[in-house]
Image (cartoon, rainbow, N blue to C red):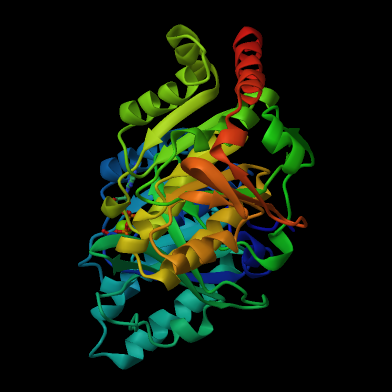
Length: 468
Ligand SMILES: Nc1ncnc2c1ncn2[C@@H]1O[C@H](COP(=O)(O)OP(=O)(O)OP(=O)(O)O)[C@@H](O)[C@H]1O
Ligand SMILES: [Mg+2]
């Protein structure tokens, strides 16, 4: 017998056992939380496999529903033409016995394998003072999956601030209970899916952030420990002598932290990333939290010019290898930011992502929220085999240390007159370099930016331009 799926991450692992024929699924949620979208998405996935979906609406207007779904990439008209989707609108004023009769007739004529009732709240609410009739309707819903040999999805409204769907026994007899909720984080909206119950499955992730985008309903489950592995094998080499000699190579999925003293930011600290991109012809995605995209581009250009490449070459290099995006992190919640960045990484498929200005998070997000969301993001990118380079000022020792402990390679720059015990001829930058598994070293700016070193990087850049 065909199983039902959802193709929705986080639900799917549970779906295997829970979405089997005869399942009663309840999707409850806040107004506008995404109940309709989720139910139709589940239908769409199974309609793709030839299963028919009957959608009974007390609420959603047909035109509105079709156009809303078209906006997220689901063409209900096409399914309808193929005989896989049937929309039926029922007036809220219908008596419960009439509702059951209509559904029974439709089951016979349409032979659906999935039924969505959007929503059951008005029908059940109309029976609040008639407990016997209410129990009868509940019992009817409970038996419906068996009579269609398929899945029944009941949508239910959850008023803000309440946990109870007021569905009586249905909540107890349902095989799966999903709540879609809104939460405010720094005054910004976060959507969360709570899986309250999934019969026959072991619940690992009970709370999953999700987003509704033009490509549909998408969840962002935190990677579980068995998920945490590097996507793909391979290592990238470096051309810049100091980096090549000490760091040697960078593996796919590794994290690099580059931190400078906030009042001694050093333009050339971008060289490690430019080197990786140029030497290995990587596709780089640069996300800046502090500058506009144009401003960031000018900074990269400046760093390239300092190597002795021409303005035209610098432009060409950026055009071929680097995509720059600017995000204002105080305009988004961490959850949404993570969702947005994950989607962008999936879409652009970069080999390396640079995050610039990570120190802003120290001021706007509490540490716990930040680091737990950050861990999820790093795991997700690692799984995709993407190198992550994180740039930020050392705004506090603690923030720096926490970030360093999540990194495989650290470059830390301070302005000083002593570097690794040696007194510098003139005050300058001193870099502390560390690679996992090695003893750290100190390199002064004078050593690092020696003529020959710059030449080697310039050559790599010029070659990348010619090749690209
Ligand atoms: N293309 C889109 N891109 C981003 N968000 C979208 C898109 N289409 C819809 N949404 C969002 O989806 C939400 C609507 O979801 P949906 O209608 O499924 O919720 P619902 O829980 O069924 O709502 P209601 O309680 O009104 O029935 C809206 O909040 C809207 O912001
Ligand atoms: Mg709805």
